[in-house]
Image (cartoon, one colour):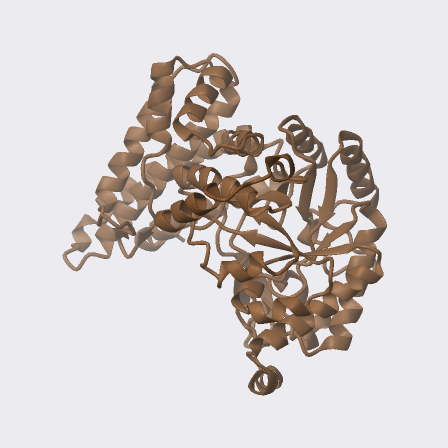
Length: 511
């Protein structure tokens, strides 16, 4: 991956670049994902103001269930804003000079729509609700015409983002299989996307879409309507990860780039800080030299995959997002790094940036700033089947020791500025320590050598962990109560602590 990015940078460094035209992005944006972390309106406005202060001019809003669709009242969720709030927010952003682009998933990632019986005929699969069938053209067109029309009525932007990424069920059902056999998957995908784009165009807007599937089928890109914008998202992988990247660049379509501030495998218990810094350092200048017209920092609150809870074989009870991440409140340093990268033709100097940020924003000494960066970039890995998923075969015990060291460092530092923001680092590290502590307990009780006589000692450890988690939950609420609704804070804490409580109840036979 590093070799490919270096080769790309060297290749374009050797070519003449007209920086008077190519050094800056017309669109300097941020993508805010509200799928499972809806923000109260005051926090949303405050975040928009921060984006403006960091030099942003565009905000892509993935409203999902927080948008109050009037013609389709089953789609909005309990945290949906009112139309008046949406209009007021967009007017506020317009006053700041920020263009608010609505993102409406319209192909995959539409579980929150298709879960309702009303839309069952649009499903590609009757058990996996993630994707619409692209051959239900009439019904799909009616639905998304309604949704785009409502979005257009409140958003003043000239763009509508239609999604279009990760269509994993493409060609799944019998109808689609027939078309794939006759015309190929690329035609199946592009014909439907073209239908969506044309709806947007009829509304007087320009369609924006993710580029991963188009990269997979580059021969079909030319079939898209002129004026369509492709967003090339890359979170640190090879430029050809989704397909032959050169064909996307040569397609003649306007392209925006998209790194990530939160993405897989980030979750409750880990954040790959160094990976995100490197993603900014490598991808932003690469896109600048490729002549991309825009840059959008994505910030995924979840993976977009859901687990179904069934009431019966046929009736769905609920959907649970498979991955949650720490709220956007804890990532100001990455936002600032992105903003600095947008304002410079040079790749981000990560070490220098982190040091300066820690000194200027937290009031740390240069020596303390070095320790802060040391703690931030300590490796963090997921745990599967009692083992850390790492390229170095790190054990869970070693991972816990690393997390403990990071927490010790954060707690030893004494910021004199913005102390509340700094507390997020200690909180995230504490959450990770608790997570790994539990994983060690679980690995022990699943060991072939585990003796049931050890259960009382295990219960003591679990009880202590649960009590410490309860105290941690109080801190989590204090730091995030302005960014999330009370119900969301409670749900985040409940899900984060569920495994320890479930194991305790099972082993103690808690009634």
